Length: 581
Image (cartoon, rainbow, N blue to C red; front, top):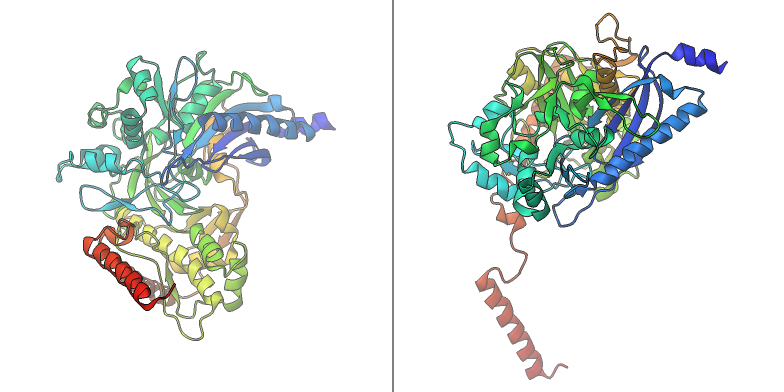
């Protein structure tokens, strides 16, 4: 019986999905894309100072080994032979920066964390053109702020009419990306400086650290990254697909510490330890690119939106590198083979998605759990003219307006918590439409439907609202693990592995849930235009940076100090004269 079951399963592919809050290992059937088993381990974040977010690279590595071992045990309990696992793919949190000693394998500092999305407490980092980009926030929606001064100093060196950083990388100069984190480490951590001087230092994003460690580490580990992760460092020329000498000189990064850049689908090396020793690691994609592949968005104009703390919307622009005029990022989508062409994407992020639900739960207390919001929204089925703009730390794409703050408007005596809950869900959808409209203007390819994934897509009210507000169908796969699936597909399709065909006719038909617009186009436009009016009301609340983040000392103003001191003297004198004890 067991032998028959194994025979039916055929080749399997594993995927490491390493995120800011957890690590997972998942195993898929390469013929059906069915998820067979997985294991997850939570990852700690460290906050050594206010505004600093770090993670322990050794803890991350150990969590990968633990997830692999536990998943293999579970497969054994299901009578599935782990020798059927023919390849492993890696998907990872992007931009997070690690520097380690290539002789000992020891990290030289904690991983300096980067975000899954900008969050409510994140400031906006100003760039030379006068526009702004979201500063980074980790999965806990905190921002690692330490590189702000590094960005400000670097920005002074970019001519206003020649932003060569953006033209080469597709990215604005920001605290978000790896180059400034690495620059900070080189400027501030003596162990890193010494290792670079002695030619012992290696740099990488999380994928590089994991692949190097899993393929042998100090004993012959492979130091590489893929084009999608490289494109998020601000050191990589997305046109030539190479590390850029001019960019490295600008950031003063020694090129000898950088990993070799490979495609997203090829054999990088073999596992050197653990239950899957000898299995090739043959797929590597940054998490948002992995989700794009897992959603099978292989055609120009296909897009996916991942709903989490924030939202990440990626649109495949094909082999054409499209530069946005509307505040979006240009990035490498994937390169699925050494000799295969590179595909590009436009990326836009909604700062506050799941975070607004948490805010209603933790700050206002109108719901006890995140799931409860769907029930509240369902009770009324409308916001009754109430609009919620969650600009907790300014407006992001496509506005880039740091002076904005969150507002709830259109309130009447009739408004209750159910209407506010409904308005919060609408806010996620309206923000997504604004990004989608920007993409349509940049690409000139109107979307026919939007593919979605992420935890919030379990909320059916949200998905129906999204279809109504976009006025196009919203399509959700029944198997939600699209990020891990994308990494597994890349690994299984690699030359020398060849167990997963990416030809359109061979791709497994994925069961989809489809949400069609249920309101007319005119109503959709009226609601959207009212939302935009509400957005304009949120602008201009903060006039200067100091108004919110000034010196908390009451004596930062000398006249105020004299006033308070003299008042205290007069009060004490009056009490003394009147004989009050």
